[in-house]
Structure formats: C-alpha cells, structure tokens
Amino acid sequence: MALIRPFVAPLLPGLFGVATFLLSGLLLIQYHVHAAASVVSDSSDQHEVPSKERVHEGADAFNALDKLLFGVLMLIAFELLDYITRHSGLWLGSKQIPVRGKHLDDLMLVDRFCIGISKAATGPFVYFYFRFAYLEPNVLWRLSELTFQNTAVALIALFIIYDFFYTILHWALHIKSVYGLIHKHHHRQKAPTRGNVDAVNVHPLEYFLGEYNHLFALFLCCRLLIQVHIVTALMFLAIGGIVAGINHTRFDIVLSVRGVNIYDSKAHDVHHRIPQSNYGQYTMLWDKVFGTYRPYDPKDRINPDAQLDPTTGKSLGFSKKAQ
Image (cartoon, rainbow, N blue to C red):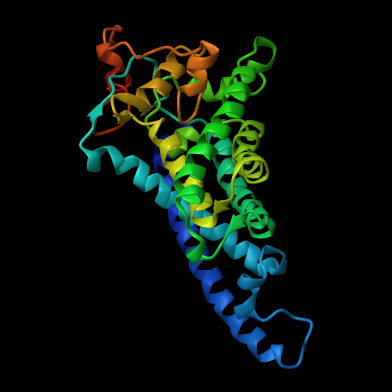
C-alpha cells in the first residue's frame, strides 16, 4: 500500500472530477426521463406537482430526485467557482504573495475527508438559503423590482453583517480551549495555495457555522434593515465564494475605493502565519474596530526553500528532499 499510495494520490482529484461529471450526466438523463414521465402522469394524478411548475412552486415542491440533482449542480458550481478562483489572479495580472509560512505540500486522508464533507454540505446549505429567500417577503424576485437600494446598498450591508459575526466566531475559534478541537486543522496550512480547496479544508462544524452565517446575514438584513433582491442574494454567495477562495491563493489582489482598501488578499495570508490577527473573511473593517488588524509587512523574512515549485505546486524544500 505504501508503494501504491504515491501513484494513486495525484490521480484522486482527477478521478473525483470524472466521477462527478459522469454522475451528473446520469442524473440529468434520469431527470429528463423522470420529467417526461411526470408530464404524462400529471393528467391522471392531480396530487403530483407538474415538473415544469415545481421550480415556480419553490423548494418545498422539490421531490427527492429534484434535491439530488440540485446537489450535483452545486458540486459542479463549486468546481466552476474553484476554477474562477484559481485563475482570477492570472486574468487580473496580479503579483504573487511570497511564501513565508510552511506550505502544506501533501493533503492527508483527514484533509480529503474534511474537503469532501464541506463539498457535500454545500448543496443542502444552498437549498435552505434559496428556500428562505423564496419564502421571505423581503426578498424580491421580479426583475422590475431591481433598485439601487435592494442591490448595491443591500450587498454592502450583507457583507458588513456577515463579517461582524464571522470575525467574532473566528476569534472564538482561536480561544485556546477550543482551538485544538476545531480550527487547528485549518491552520495546518500556513501558506494557502489551492484556492477553494484550502478554503474548505476545515472542521465540518466550522464549515457549517461559516456557511450558515450567510443565511443569518440575509435574515438580519431583510428583517432589520432593507429589502434584498434575489440577484443580490445570489451575488452575495458567488462573490463571497470567490473572495474566500482568493484568500487561500498566492494572488496579491487589492480592491480599493478612493485610496481606502476595501479588500486585500494579503490580510488573510497574514492570519495564516500569525493566527491572533485578521479574523475577518471579506474585509478588515471589524478587525480595525476590535483592534485585531495586523497589516501585511513586505519586509518580513522570506525563506527561499519555502517558495513554491511552479511545476509541482510544492515547496522547493519538499522538491529537494524528494530528489
């Protein structure tokens, strides 16, 4: 087994992608057959919600196959999001953040388990997110109802609310008595490179709390502040997923408005090296308020052996040992 593992391990991501693609194809074919059959049965069974109307009836009208298909589509969406994240820096022409912490060159079985659980949990989360959005009267769905307030203003409010609670949660996960039980696993990687893969390599409880915080932010925004359009709710998830992924790459990406940094990917890189700082996910606003913000220092020492081999994606020190 020890001899086989080095040859099999590099193939696992590709095999997973092929398996997901094949499973998706089979489910789409089965779904097409099921939909065609249900259209025929609609005329004889008045209690069955017609296939073409189930989406319009909302999440509560989904049957088991609908939910399974939805879950597979979320897996595909996750892979697409990961592709965008991994190439975003190349498209934007961004520089690379030098590696200063120890890079997790090889993913262990526990890492792959946590990543798999996180991916599997994404489908149910998005389902409940859309279910809430469908039933919530302050989430608007008609395109004619789009306004500056329920899009741009609401989007900013969602990110601010989310990061307020995430910053507190993240700080709590670093409490000494809690850290070793949950969050320590994520910090085995001190120089993230794999985008969304490194981002979701967390304890299942941590992933649950972090993801459902999006739903909590949407709930608070709708009930306490302003109405939110469904386009905004979608953008909140999509942009959040991309930004969280970029936080776990080496891309140096900064978003600033009139000289004020709204987002800087280097802030989270600092957190992975110096954990008692920069607890925010999308912005450092609340870290600056709470006094936990630590700016990136380009003068920090760089270990040449810690830099990454562009051909293998592993640290140069690891490549030298392998030789």
